[in-house]
Amino acid sequence: MTSPSPSASALGFPADFLWGASTSAFQVEGAAAEDGRGPSIWDTFCRLKGRVDNGDTGDVACDHYHRYGEDVALMKGLGVDAYRFSIAWPRLLPRGRGPVNPLGLDSYDRLIDRLLEAGIEPWACLYHWDLPQALQDQGGWANRDSAGWFADYAVLCAKRYGDRVKCWATFNEFSVFTLFGYALGWGAPSVADRGEHLKVIHDVNLAHGAGVDVLRDLVPSASIGAVHSYQPCRPEDDSPENVEGAALFNELWNLAFPDAQILGHYPPRIARAIEPYVQAGDMARIARPMDWFGLNHYAPLFAKADPSMVWGCGFGSPPADMPRTDIGWPLQPEAFREALLDLTARYRLPIYVTENGYGTKTLEAPDERGVVMDTARIDYLRACIAQMAEARRDGADVRGYFVWSLLDNFEWGAGYGTRFGIVHVDFATQTRTPKESARWYAALIGGALGRSGA
Ligand code: FCB
Image (spheres, rainbow, N blue to C red):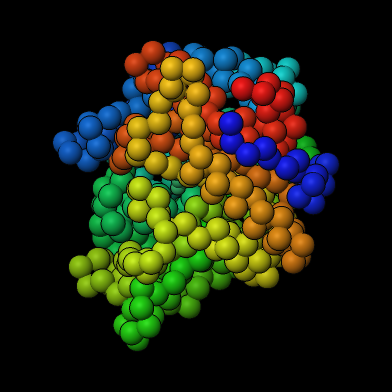
């Protein structure tokens, strides 16, 4: 047994604070070639030799496509108020646009209906890194037409699900999928080019704005947000070149998207470079009124000047004495409070923490009693949630928190070897086993699983 959790109310969270769990389509669904789904850029990337650890793919993942009923039941036991999932564009529109796949549409009806029956609010995200490959073949996000493609896809989702889904996010982590995909070359579609990256930043911002307009028009009383990765960015040391490198990296990682979308302009270091791609009226198309800011936070970011990178800056090392996870992520929960306060001051929107969690590559498996003792995850979640409570006391308008992730899943380039779930998945049998962190979280938020005494 781990130490008992205080209840959320004892920590000062109000009764209407929203507690949830997050996943994304490509990382959990599997059924990659089933019921008419088309390939996405990650299906392609997974097949490039040596790019994903162990040659893992999203073909089966957690088989959430079929096992959604069991997963909703797990969430009901946890006591979550909401489930944040993403819709797979290539499942609805196998070629990205044009013919609609009715079986794909049906699959999210089933999930949404099951969630509603369980009393769990569906939070749908339209894009979590899985662009249809057919659109990539037409230039992907580097084609300015992509905003229109995205708007058409958003229309389909809004019309079909808008009667039941009220909480919508346009995109997940704009900066991460654009940086990794177009500047660092570490993720799909594996490009490393500054000009392409700039073009993509702007096109994705345009797509976001178009998506917001669609949702606003078609979903009465929709609550619309966008999900940003925000990790306070610090220079590796105080040399002038690393301070400047970190300032530029901060703009690329933390500011390029929310500044454009909420403040209506690009941050100073990239504003000049992006000008050639900006047409008259674009910034007004991008900066649409938003209901909330979705924050994904994991750890502070250390950055430096790095001439080998297309932007001349890149990842630095955390101080040697800073604790880290076994996947190298710094452990500094105070950075979470800092992020919440920074964002409150800068953007003045209600915040939902749409992801926060702890990943490890250490083998976590049920012991002979079926217990998965993930103490380090509990410690980190507990510390982060305490920081969130403090940030609220200090004036941050935080209204909800979604743990990443409900399930161990496909962790992009790290494949299935890195686990973030509060529920263990045995990928050979698809058996789900709630870890101790799941029981801890349930106890915090008042779920039945937290009372089972195991
Ligand atoms: C975030 C992603 C999510 C997951 C976590 C660990 O950057 O949004 O898909 O991979 O990190």
